Image: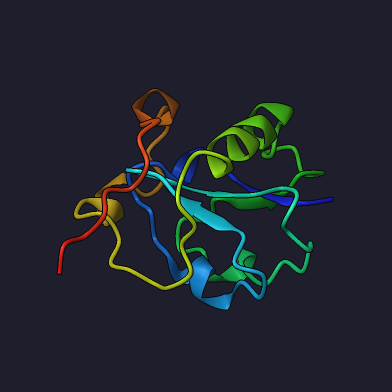
Amino acid sequence: MTYVVTENCIKCKYTDCVEVCPVDCFYEGENMLVIHPDECIDCGVCVPECPAEAIFADTEPQATPHWLEINRLYADLWPNITAKKAPLPDADKENGRKGKETDLSPQPASEEIT
Protein backbone atom coordinates (compact mmCIF):
# COMPACT_ATOMS: atom_id res chain seq x y z
CA MET A 1 0.00 0.00 0.00
CA THR A 2 1.01 3.60 -0.57
CA TYR A 3 -0.64 6.98 -0.30
CA VAL A 4 -1.39 9.17 -3.29
CA VAL A 5 -2.28 12.81 -3.81
CA THR A 6 -5.45 13.29 -5.84
CA GLU A 7 -7.31 15.96 -7.80
CA ASN A 8 -8.24 18.33 -4.98
CA CYS A 9 -4.59 19.27 -4.47
CA ILE A 10 -4.52 20.87 -7.93
CA LYS A 11 -4.45 24.67 -7.67
CA CYS A 12 -4.32 24.47 -3.85
CA LYS A 13 -0.92 22.95 -3.07
CA TYR A 14 -1.12 23.18 0.68
CA THR A 15 2.13 21.80 2.05
CA ASP A 16 1.17 20.91 5.61
CA CYS A 17 1.60 17.25 4.64
CA VAL A 18 5.22 17.76 3.62
CA GLU A 19 6.19 18.97 7.07
CA VAL A 20 5.15 15.73 8.80
CA CYS A 21 6.44 13.19 6.27
CA PRO A 22 9.20 11.17 7.95
CA VAL A 23 10.73 10.02 4.64
CA ASP A 24 10.44 13.17 2.48
CA CYS A 25 8.50 11.43 -0.30
CA PHE A 26 6.62 14.51 -1.58
CA TYR A 27 7.45 16.14 -4.90
CA GLU A 28 6.35 19.56 -6.06
CA GLY A 29 4.84 20.59 -9.35
CA GLU A 30 3.78 24.02 -10.45
CA ASN A 31 0.26 23.61 -9.02
CA MET A 32 0.16 20.24 -7.20
CA LEU A 33 2.12 17.90 -4.96
CA VAL A 34 2.59 14.15 -5.48
CA ILE A 35 3.88 11.28 -3.35
CA HIS A 36 6.50 8.91 -4.72
CA PRO A 37 4.82 5.52 -4.25
CA ASP A 38 8.14 3.67 -3.99
CA GLU A 39 9.34 5.94 -1.18
CA CYS A 40 6.13 6.19 0.87
CA ILE A 41 6.29 4.00 3.99
CA ASP A 42 2.50 3.91 4.38
CA CYS A 43 2.50 5.64 7.75
CA GLY A 44 -0.47 7.89 6.92
CA VAL A 45 0.65 10.85 9.02
CA CYS A 46 0.16 13.15 6.03
CA VAL A 47 -3.54 12.36 5.61
CA PRO A 48 -4.98 14.35 8.54
CA GLU A 49 -2.60 17.24 7.82
CA CYS A 50 -3.98 17.90 4.32
CA PRO A 51 -6.48 20.82 4.44
CA ALA A 52 -7.75 19.84 0.97
CA GLU A 53 -8.36 16.22 2.02
CA ALA A 54 -6.59 15.17 -1.19
CA ILE A 55 -4.45 12.29 0.15
CA PHE A 56 -5.75 8.73 0.16
CA ALA A 57 -4.42 5.22 0.58
CA ASP A 58 -4.18 3.56 -2.81
CA THR A 59 -6.72 1.01 -1.58
CA GLU A 60 -9.44 3.67 -1.23
CA PRO A 61 -11.85 4.37 -4.10
CA GLN A 62 -10.70 8.00 -4.47
CA ALA A 63 -7.16 6.81 -5.21
CA THR A 64 -7.83 5.19 -8.54
CA PRO A 65 -4.95 3.52 -10.42
CA HIS A 66 -4.96 6.65 -12.59
CA TRP A 67 -3.90 8.80 -9.60
CA LEU A 68 -1.28 6.28 -8.57
CA GLU A 69 0.26 6.56 -12.04
CA ILE A 70 0.13 10.38 -11.95
CA ASN A 71 1.93 10.34 -8.60
CA ARG A 72 4.54 7.89 -9.89
CA LEU A 73 5.12 9.81 -13.15
CA TYR A 74 5.54 13.26 -11.65
CA ALA A 75 7.50 12.12 -8.58
CA ASP A 76 10.20 11.05 -11.03
CA LEU A 77 10.14 14.45 -12.80
CA TRP A 78 9.49 17.08 -10.12
CA PRO A 79 11.81 18.29 -7.33
CA ASN A 80 11.54 16.93 -3.82
CA ILE A 81 9.90 19.22 -1.28
CA THR A 82 10.77 18.87 2.40
CA ALA A 83 9.58 22.10 4.01
CA LYS A 84 6.23 23.82 4.30
CA LYS A 85 5.53 26.72 1.94
CA ALA A 86 2.59 29.06 1.50
CA PRO A 87 -0.28 27.55 -0.51
CA LEU A 88 -1.19 28.91 -3.93
CA PRO A 89 -2.90 32.33 -3.81
CA ASP A 90 -6.42 31.03 -4.60
CA ALA A 91 -6.08 27.79 -2.64
CA ASP A 92 -9.06 28.38 -0.36
CA LYS A 93 -11.25 29.27 -3.35
CA GLU A 94 -10.08 26.20 -5.31
CA ASN A 95 -10.40 23.78 -2.39
CA GLY A 96 -13.26 21.42 -3.15
CA ARG A 97 -13.88 22.54 -6.72
CA LYS A 98 -14.65 19.58 -8.97
CA GLY A 99 -13.14 19.01 -12.40
CA LYS A 100 -9.65 20.33 -11.65
CA GLU A 101 -7.75 17.50 -13.31
CA THR A 102 -7.66 19.39 -16.61
CA ASP A 103 -5.83 22.18 -14.75
CA LEU A 104 -2.95 19.91 -13.71
CA SER A 105 0.31 21.45 -14.89
CA PRO A 106 3.06 18.99 -15.85
CA GLN A 107 5.65 21.65 -15.04
CA PRO A 108 7.86 21.32 -11.96
CA ALA A 109 7.70 23.95 -9.25
CA SER A 110 9.67 27.02 -10.15
CA GLU A 111 12.65 27.75 -8.02
CA GLU A 112 12.18 30.70 -5.75
CA ILE A 113 14.88 33.32 -5.96
CA THR A 114 15.84 34.72 -2.58
